[in-house]
Length: 488
Image 1 (tube, helix red, strand yellow):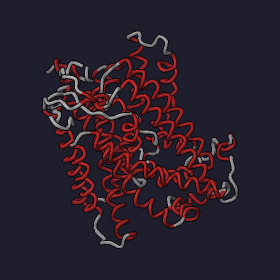
Image 2 (spheres, rainbow, N blue to C red):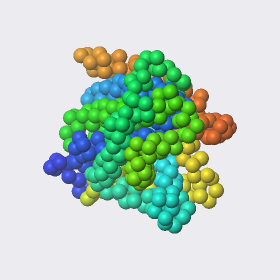
Image 3 (cartoon, one colour):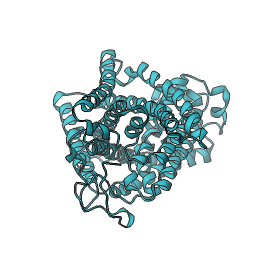
Image 4 (tube, rainbow, N blue to C red):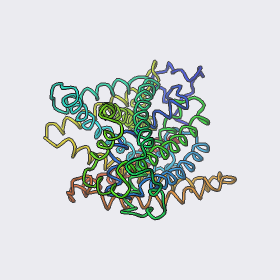
């Protein structure tokens, strides 16, 4: 990495005292990294807010299987992704890998696009978190009824502080949140299993008869989207202990755990409603169907606990998305694409504190515009998450193309046929379909407003094209900066 200054080695990666170094520091272990990336998936939000929708409008009774299929596609991508990580020791992740395989112009387009993905995710979850806290305080705790943006501002302030500090602090906070979330989900699973569901436990949801129920494409799209976050394993390379061991353990651990948790919980949820009634109930009641099943099998107290943890789960997503957006901006600064002053590392915390402050300020401004303009907070939330999903899947598809190209060009594939070619091919087919389905069904994120869907899709790919054009300009005007694109 030509942009990385030489640092004296310190025990467990202690932060450098050089404030303007472009090498981040940290000492995250396997479990800390696992908790960080798993928190981004917000398992309680997936279980309570996504699974009922998947059963209702996606793969129906066969939804448990679709999580296994989606997990297999993501596993293939992660296999190729981590093979690339072993060959190309750079923290830029998708940004660096697309650059290495497909050139600096497409690489910078991918970098800009992923910055947009994580930034919109962080922005979108702020109003969701604010609304969730408001409902909890007023309905469950009999507290004051305040506007969502009051609570969102509190969340924003906490995230801004954690983003400024050493990454280990955020990892510890998210570990506590995640453990409590998983405890609630496993408690629900245990009581439904122990009581045999509504009519006795049935293996029908895993039967091939139900694999293609409903809309298989919609189910697969949503399932793949629920396994996000593994890019962080490489993006945090400079901030983990023994990255050659920690990164693959955390990435594959995340995928395996998520498949078991989501597929198992969905199977039990379908059984809790009754295999014959599950789709009809989920379609009629939406996310309330899961709330009702929690009360029916676990009692009101478990639902109240889940409501509290739904708030902390959304907080964890904002923390994760903010941290990754800051590191994308940091990498762009380290390369000189934006001001190199953005790539300053805090002398005490080893964090990308300037990039973090910029992302925090932009999040605040975006949400203030929503408040002043009177935009419905949940419409804003849905639209931004739609942008985040489309950008993320599109860049992953581009990365899946870039990896075998790079490995072939540099003769790094020998002895690794599966991770170099077969796994990327499966990924290209799966993610390619997901991108098409995402574009086709994007109006679901904008309450059916087609012109708004077209505008947001244009923004997504407009940002990518903008990155390409910036690279073209840099090639002519600043060739030294152009050569550093992608952490070269």
